[in-house]
Length: 341
Image 1 (cartoon, rainbow, N blue to C red):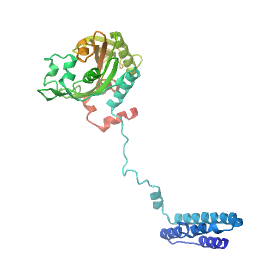
Image 2 (image 1 turned 180 degrees about the vertical axis):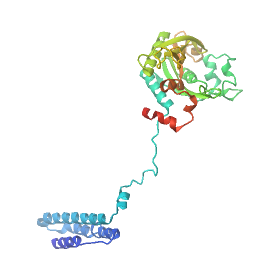
Image 3 (image 1 turned 30 degrees about the vertical axis):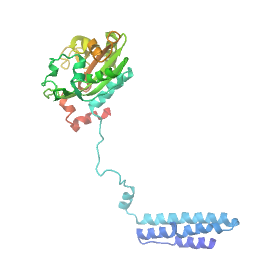
Image 4 (image 1 turned 60 degrees about the horizontal axis):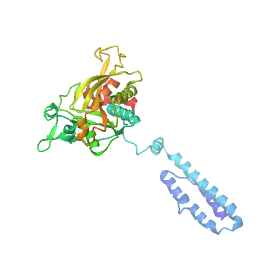
């Protein structure tokens, strides 16, 4: 066995090749599963016990010698181009790709939801194609309300049932109230549609986050505290709010909420039109008629609701002047938000 090992060692040491094909032939001859060294390994079983240690050591040295010899010959024939090809990752794309970013509306929506989830609200979602009952009837809209006109709402079908694209995510609130008994504490994000002329300040579709809390002894003070907490987490700890009386069919009393302008600090500028305040949302106490329509006893439970446009909040955070930019998919505009990923 030792004579065979020494003879093979001399043969491998003096082996040469004229090209890479010849190197591969040498690898197969000596190192393949049926190569010369593998055959010697198979014969190792018949070596006497007293010689196994010496022979085993010589076999390992022989295999190492052959491996290094093959690698050396292969390296001598490899050109710079061959080396680059060996290191080249063929699974990579042929062209470079610019990394994507999250859409600014998604960035702001996720931040809004994070704030409300921290206050104990859960997320509820519903269909964009709705019926009249969930969008209008259950929310105390009178039959002759302007929102039910074709010029304000996108109707898909009329008579015997009015099917439409929802005009607000309040329809999600009514669906939850129909199936869930209080306490209810939800926020409803989603896309809504209204039949409006598209301009820098308006669009036929936009996005909302609406909130609803129903339980025993819920007060307007609870609503104000939640909205103040949201405003300060969203726009800064120095943010102030004010509530102005308003009207919505589904809340009574109702209010619109302004925040102090974070550009001028409430002193008055062009952005806030010199008032020092910027409107961000509508809110109010849930009308008892809405509770009763959804099967909730208004004598036992009370609640509040609020709703705001995600585009509006995004405008305030990033100073986007044209609503159309949110849906035009201009890569130059989207790249401005790479740092917000």
